[in-house]
Image (cartoon, rainbow, N blue to C red; front, side):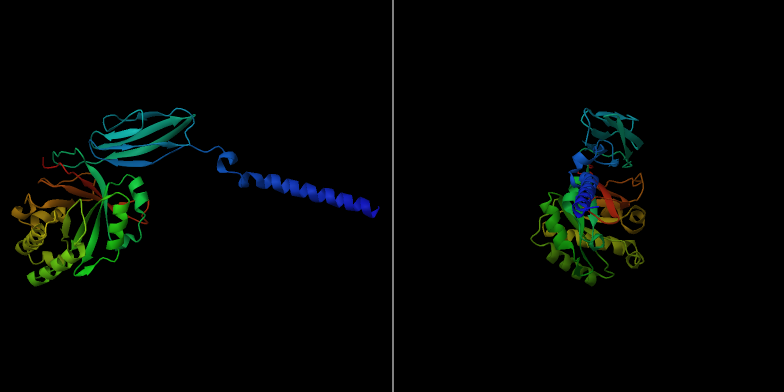
Amino acid sequence: MSHSFVKRITKTVLLFCILTTSLLLLPTLLPHSHNARAKARLSSSSLHLVPGYSRKLTVAGAKGEVTWRSRNNNVATVDTDGTVTGKKPGSCRIVARTGGRKLTCSVRVYNPGKVINTKGAMHGIDVSVWQGKIDYNKVKNDGIDFVIMRAGYKTGVDTTFKRNYRNARKAGLKVGCYWFVTATSQSALKKQIRACRKAVKGKTFELPVFIDIESSSQFSLGKKFCSSLVSGFCDKMLKAGYTTGWYTSRSFIPKYLYDSVSENENYVAWVAEHDSKLRYTSDYDIWQYSHTGKIDGISGYVDLNWYFPNARS
């Protein structure tokens, strides 16, 4: 066999190998739209609602017309544009169909408890250093309307407060804050109030500056003392020009707060009960209904809340 013939055969085999490899790699080198038919998908696989609150679903990669249907119109309805509205407490599924595919979103409508005006309701989160660095643009795009952030604890400022405040406002979210008060004496309370006022000075809030009271060391001092903590903090914040309020668990309220404090119309009431229904029978404004929420832009769990700005109207 001549050397030139061997050389030609070798060259042909080499070209064949190169061509075969190129054909195999070509799909991975092309844009995704050329690689495979993009699968249609919903903007969210689950929704949390209250009666009267709406969220819009969209379909990415839709193939032609999208049709929508609710499996239970008594719980939630869906418009032709994908807007889902809560009707009454319960669970159901929203079904979208496009290009022969069926997409489903699970919906849960939460029960605010007593008859309450849910018009203008907003869905939000509360955060602290425990949530780490947060992508607030993703948070907002995931249907969150507001964030209440921890400003501080005892007499120290939360290390993420300034960043959370700056980035949440930049993303267009409504903002409020809270101070985790641990005081077990009036002198300690005064120090913590001063620290809070210093931390929030110059900042703008659409939601109140709250006192967070939930320590057993405070509860052990009784109802009169705990009530004085809340009224002392809130009255100082009101005098400083802030909208203010209190936060604690629903089960703690009758035990540790006088009605004159918990039902004070000058204080925004933020009640925690992690369930599908709030069993608080007095007036309130914000309900923290979960501590295991999953929101895009946040690693791990986050507290979820409903705010009813017209609750007392």
